Image (cartoon, helix red, strand yellow):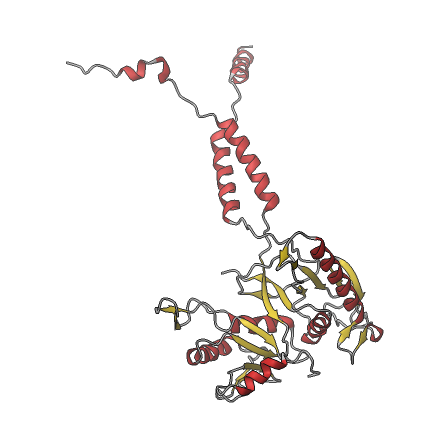
Length: 184
Length: 189
């Protein structure tokens, strides 16, 4: 006894049902045109820095404060970058430039992680570049000061609302220039 | 003669066969292109483009810049919103050299060489225009026009020295601009 052949095969509708590819192609071509027209392939990012402003009232308030601020400062010098605090909140540390004469961003970043561990709530840093510091070196230092890499050890701060320790996402994101009025 | 007839038959067979476009493989290609474009699609609203001959520094920042007034420092000139504000001094050494000197004319500087006069004038003009637009706008904050934000994007070649950037920042500060956005190329991760 042979099994009865399937009736589906013999059905007149069983012929190759074709997907209407042409309208799909039309849609795709339109979509590609739109995406090509609107996509920006240039990955431009920005680093924000507010203009330092002296508010006399704030200065008076700060002077009244018992606890002096950290005011983390990075001074570019001829052969190194000094990390220090005008209120002696941290031990000054000089980080030698690389052999190419550029700031050693890796060592600066590592030193700043140690500072951040001591002052986890601090979010600003002052940079004091030299007159002839190149712009790309400045941007590299600003990156080292601001960003926290995935490979860096996690630093936690307590969320006041939830009471849970949360990892911080950036080191010192607020960067100010300390010598806009100076001549050095 | 016989060979000719066989060739003729082959030719006929080719002509009779319906020509079909390979839509399936074309669809594959288009799907790959669409996926790539969607993956790299950037929804940011800025219209910043780099000026020719300008090499921006590379940054690990993830912040996408919003549209704002933009000052561009090229090796030859300083432009504000695509309008040339001033030309740098071209010396015999800098002409034809890859190293630009970014030297200002003495007549373009005041306040002890800290402020760039043509840039200050252009920034004040741009500020007045923005404030006028804000005053005419229906957007109100506590019944008053929205305040002037004073954001200035700075696009400069990576070889520019800090002294030039500082002059621009000082000038912008005196013209009432309070926030600077330094533009850079995103570092590939």
